[in-house]
Image 1: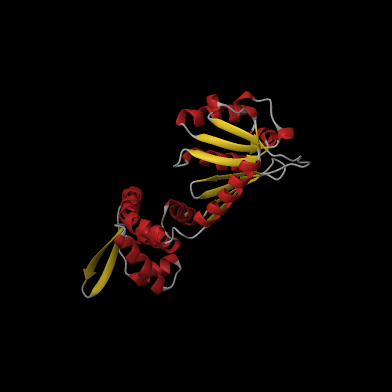
Image 2: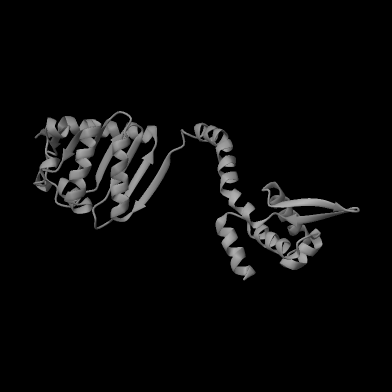
Length: 249
C-alpha cells in the first residue's frame, strides 16, 4: 500500500524521497530523522533533506523534545494545498524566467512535429503571425491530401476572419478544385505559379514574422518550425525572388 501511495504522491508533485518520508512520518506520528530514515528505508542524510523540503512545503512541522528535534506530519488534507503553493511559486518565478528567455531570444529554435496532427499544428501557427500575413511556396493538392478538405475550409474561414493575408507560389499542375484555395480578394490570397514543371511531390515552405516553417506531404508526415530572424530573412529573400519570376494566376 505505501509503495502505491508513494507513487501516487510523486505523480501529484512530491519528490520520491519526500513522498516516502511523508508516509513514514504519517505512520510514526512523531519521530526523529533517524526513525523516519529507518521506516522509509533511506539514508539518514536523505531523510533530513526530504523532511526539510516537506517543512518548506508546509507538510511537516518540527518540535523540540529536550535537545532533540522531532518531526510531525501535517494532516493529509494539507496535500490539497500543494497545487496552490506550486502555482504561487511558479507565478513568482515567471519574471525571472521571462528575463532568461529574452536574453536568449536571438538563439534559433527548431521544433519538429510528427504526423498529420503535427502538420496541422504547424499550419495553425500561421494564424498567429503578428504581421497578419505570410508567404509560401507549395502544392495545393498536397495540402489537401495532408490536412483534408474539411479542415482547410475551416482554416481558411478563420484566417479570413482574422484578416491574415497570403501570397502563394504554387505548382500549376498540382492545383486543387477546392474553391477556398483559389486566388482572389474573397480569400485574402494572391497566387502565382512556378514557371517550370514539377514532376514530384513537394513540401510547403512558409515564411512569416521571424519564422520559417515546413509541412511535408502526408507520406512523409512532419512539420518543422524554425524561429530565427536570420533564417527568415534569407528565406524571404529567396521567396521574393521566386515571386517576381512566377506567373500571375
